[in-house]
Image (tube, rainbow over all chains, first blue to last red; front, side, top):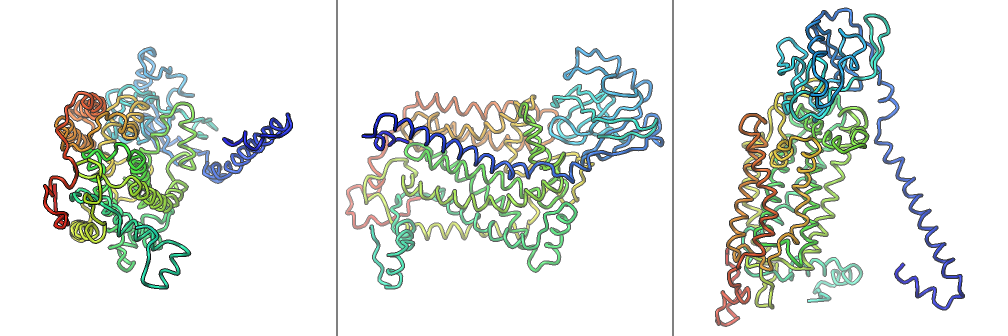
Length: 184
Length: 415
C-alpha cells in the first residue's frame, strides 16, 4: 500500500478513490473469509457431541448415611455429595456472610439442607480437595482441605483460607425422587 | 569468499542450480568466528545436538506409543519391556529433555553474562527466547503423554492457569481440554502438538542461526571484530572444539541414560493417571521449578499467573533495560556481581519450588520472587552509574602485542 500513490498518478480524478475502495473491500473480504475458515479448526477443539452427551449423572442417595460423603463422576470431574449432620448445617448457617471471600449464603448453595452437592475441584488450580473419607484432613472449617496449595473450605464448600478465589461450584441438579438426584 | 568454486564438477553443477553447498561453505566452513570464544560458546551447538536427538528418539517412540487415555500408560510400559531397545529410546528421550534444558539454560546465562542480547543482536536474543518458550510448551505437553499421576495432575494444574484470565478464562480452559476436565481429547491433541512443535523449534533455530550469521558471534570480550586478524574460520577450529564438547556432553548424558535413568523422575508418575485422586505433592519437572515458585508466592490467582509469565516476558525487554554500551561482564564490576546474585536467586527459587508450600518456604518464596524481579530495575540503575573498566583495543591486540601476524593462528585462549 506504500506505493499506492505511484500507480494512481496520472489517473482521472475519482479513479484513485475507486481503486482504494476496491483494495480495502478485497482486503476486508479476505480477512473475514480467512477468519471464518479458521473457525471450524478452532471449534473442532471444543467439547464434541459425545462429550456433551455424557453431561448428566444420576445418583441414588439412599445408602449414604448422615455424616457420610460420596464422590461421583460428572463430566469427568468428581462431584462431592455430603449428607450433612445438623451440627454441620448449623455451622454453615452461622457464618457471617460479610466475612467470606466469595460471599454466598448456605441456603443459596443447597436445595435440601442435609444434602450438599458441589464440584470437587479446587477453584485455585484444579486439584481435588481431601475430606471425603473418614480419615482425611478437613481443614480448620470442617469441610475440605486442598493438599496442593493449602486452600480450606467449610461445610458449605465455601473458600475460607488459602489461595483459591472462589467457593466450590454448585452444579445444576434436580431431585428426581427423595433419594435420587440427577446432576447436570 | 562469495560464489564458492568447487573442484567436483557434479557439486559445481548442482550448486549453480541450488546453492546448498555454497551456503554450507559460507556458514559452517568459512564463517569468520572471533578467535577468543571460550567453552561457554559450546552450548548453542550442544543444544542443537539435543534437539536432533529429541526429534529422532521421539519419532521412533511415536511408532510404538498410543495417545489414548485407556492405552497410553500401558503402551509406554510396553515400549519399556517389549519393544526392541524401547527402553533406550524412552530413557534417551526422557533424560534428553533435561539435558536440552541444561544446555539452553547455560546458553541463556552465557548470553546474559557476556551481553549477547545487546545491539545489534536484539532479534537474535528474541528468537532465542521464542525457542525457549516453545521448548517449554513442548516439554509440558510431552510430560502429559505417559499418562501417569503427575502427567495428569501437572496438566490439570497448568491448564487451569488459563482459567485465571478474566471473563473468557473458563471458555479457554474448556477449549484447551476439549471437555470439562483433562481427558482423552486433551491427551490426543497434546500428542499431535508435541509431535509438531519440535519442527517449529527446528525452523526457529534455523532463523536463530541466520540472525547469528548476520550479526556475527559475540565473544568473551564483548567488543566488535575489527578485522580479519580478530577471526578464524569456523572449520576446523570451532568444528573441532564443538566436537570435543559433544564428546563431554554425550559422556554425561549417556551416563545418566544408562546408570541413573530415573534420576529426574518423580516415582508418582509410574502410577497410572487417576482423575479422582490428586497426589499429595505435585511438582513440575526441575526446569520449571523457579517459575512454579514465583506462581505460588503470589497470594492471588491471576496475580500469580501474571507474575509467572512476566518472569519470562521481561527478558524480551532486556536490550533496553540495560543501558550500558559495554557488553561483557568482564569489564562491568557491578553488573558481574549482580549477575551472579541473579543466578543464585534462580537456583534458590528452583529449590523453593520443589518443596511443599509450607512453613518458611512461603515467606522465602516471596522474598526470592521479589529478588528475581528486582534484578531488572537494578540492572537499569547500575547500567547508568557503573564505570566500566577500560576495554582492549581489539580481540587480537592482547594476544599479538606487536608479534608478527604469521604466528597469530593460536586460537586456544580459554578466557
